[in-house]
Image (spheres, rainbow, N blue to C red):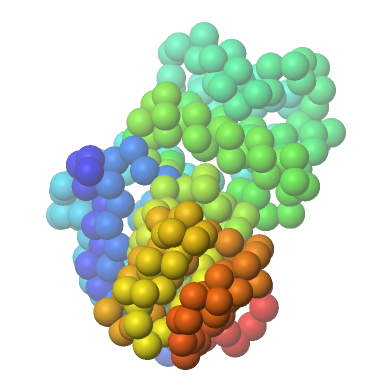
Length: 307
Ligand SMILES: Nc1ncnc2c1ncn2[C@@H]1O[C@H](COP(=O)(O)OP(=O)(O)OP(=O)(O)O)[C@@H](O)[C@H]1O
């Protein structure tokens, strides 16, 4: 595990009497891509704004690159770039014109950076086309390009795939993976849809009504959503023997409560039940288990709404 980039400690945000973030404690490590997942109004933008310094917490504290005083955090924010809500694009300028404008505004002398970043985000072939004629996906990539001008170590992106067509989503996903792999960037990206970011992110932070419901890795999510046949039986050893010798599989786990999780034959339940029955295994349960990503997310947040 890499260095801790950000650690929040019980952040709370209240607007008048309305608390929109409750005790938010999360930790981001270097070189990982974190998906901040929650429904509309869950508090994603609010959290991102606090980290970026656009808004301030009512209570709680955080560390950024190991620094925790207000003054030091302010200095460390130079190592962060964010795209929250709309990308800061001038519609009458080309992609390169937009980059030049923002580069000069920030006093960055290196002109070659413009082409280098356009290449990185896949916008080199837009030439004289003005940004107002770009697709939504191209606009989002241009917004990310502007954020990349300062070569941030932590990139914060608020719903950059919202409203994009499937190709636009794939392009952003590929870009994030490239930034993480080639530049070891840490990325925090929000979405209201868990499957949308599936396998692009290395970690998930699920937020609901301002509370963190879960922080987990991609592997943990896969494990939680993995499909299997649950076999309950009076003699698990006998059942395991039939699976190995008759069905020629070792892809199962014997659980302590006289059940077996079988990860093979998910499409052929009949073959399994027949083999067990013919070999005298007494079944107490036999069912297909496992969640879709969508269901898993809904269960975590209480299944109140559809995303
Ligand atoms: N400036 C503000 N004043 C009062 N309430 C606000 C303000 N900004 C956000 N809120 C409220 O805070 C809650 C969280 O909003 P936030 O924008 O952080 O959610 P979100 O998860 O980013 O949602 P979305 O996906 O819709 O952007 C919402 O109930 C919202 O109405």
